[in-house]
Length: 327
Length: 264
Image (cartoon, rainbow over the protein chains, first blue to last red):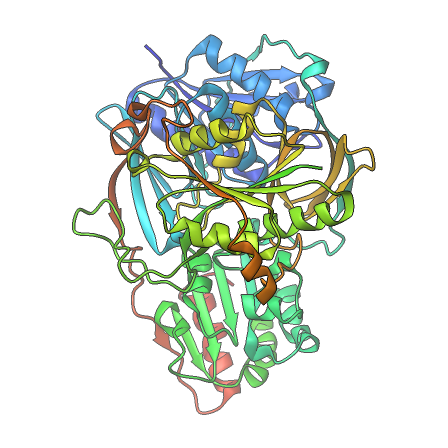
């Protein structure tokens, strides 16, 4: 009988990514609900020294696959290794992150194991010993509660920034073990040949704690400066609505919404965004939503925790001054 | 270069989604169906590659007969032929089963490259592309925003943005890539294109035609069971910030964000 909860760690250039701690913390909660062990699987090159620390967040064991060919994520190498480990150890539940990497990995891994997978989940529970996952569909216009049938391990990916990270307990460490696997170079068809770093130094919208976003009400690309000033001050990333992106004011990578990024920051400030349903779909899991719009009937106010009915060109610069008092 | 584009029909992104009385499905009566926006990028990119390297573009759709409209749209944009996998037994299938049907339809075709959208904007799963690639035993690269095919047609170089960086990835062909916004601006079908599309071959295939047993499909065969659909969690009615002037409103907002919401 398949048993135990597994989570897959995510590292980049040897640094553990934050989503990993979200997964380990959530994995611990699920393992406790089942009364089973939590194992973290870490792939990379020279990453073993990072493994024991997962115990602080509740991991019982860490399985480390260390190989130079695993230094940078590639679908074929990672799927091959994790698939071997899953088949050899038969965990009952497998949780990954729905980061860009995790979405790619989880989809292919599920296919290689011929199991169902619940993508981009916002909540997990154990009911009758089974994993039950809640996931937004239609970009959050509805939520689906799903479970698994004849599908082992029960596999799901968690939306970044939704699962809370437990307070680390430094007295606890995990048992670190070397994973047994083989990798055939002939199976590796894809290769990362170059990495272009984003030079803005901004956190990606999907990982940002705060987002200041502008829509059609910005009137033109030159006016985003006032959003950037506010964003710089409070440590936010700048997003945009589809109409602003389609107008060519902002790059595609800044678009928030159903055909853009789905974000869950602690603070989302929507400036001059009317709140088309496809935009609301992309940001409604934000913890605190502020809307600044001069049209008091704009649908965005229905979703906002704080609404300011006024011209954003007056409010935003004033807000930038006012927040200085609290930084 | 022979290219396959997988295509799904989804509710227009402006659609309201209503949950049915069974609490397990959505009401489809008033929905306007469109080609999945991410699949449109795939169609466009396939046409550009064809224009540059020659070859044929085949569109493969799955679903009820209405999906024909979206396949015709792709043909009107310039694709050469279409296949619609349609069978009552497919109704209610999960992504895994749908991908199996698509892979079965594709496996005997000649192809160098397969496009899918990075996800359908309905279920938001994004697993069909990867599953088709796995079943066909070919590499996948997901969420691409740029693609260049080598002159010899044996490999591709793509750009894939991840959090804070863009990876440049090379892959041997055949391969499957999933299209992300930013890849291109899809063309509109021209009037002559629409006329021509009516005469282009569009074949329908049932599960039996694909050599598949219908027992493996449909609601009953789902490995991912839907327990319940619910509306999104309601947000409490917000506060409209008081103030005589925009400056006063800004001051009050900053204070609330600090003292009440504790996000500053």
